[in-house]
Image 1: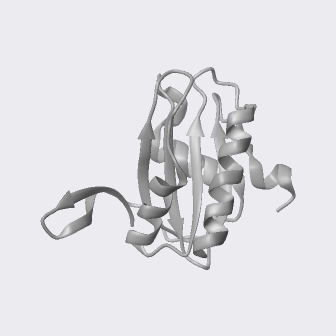
Image 2: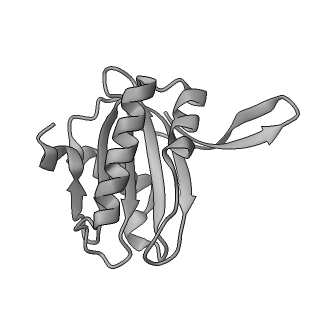
Image 3: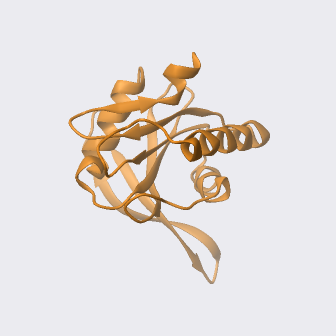
Length: 153
């Protein structure tokens, strides 16, 4: 069972709110293609007309624990900082994360901003001890770009 959450401020502080549950067999993610397919199936990224930044927290055995929409942008940009990503990872107890966003154009080729975002997220993860497994860009017709594949990780 996969659970999608949001975070909210309450009188008790910042809390996780379960939004959706997905029936899904518990299996380990073995690589970028499976991550891209999972993000596409859950968030329908290739159909969206605005950029969305989404994430999954994973166990040490690479099982997906929780899913989040982190930010929604405009047609060609989505603003966020590593704070929004790692706040969710820490609240949900994630031991590693995977992050993805869509390119509305359908072309998953990374921009310079995408490369800089990848480096910021990866560096923040090293600081807090929650490694970034991959940063994916989702295009159309199943196309994706994996920073982990291209970095040789």
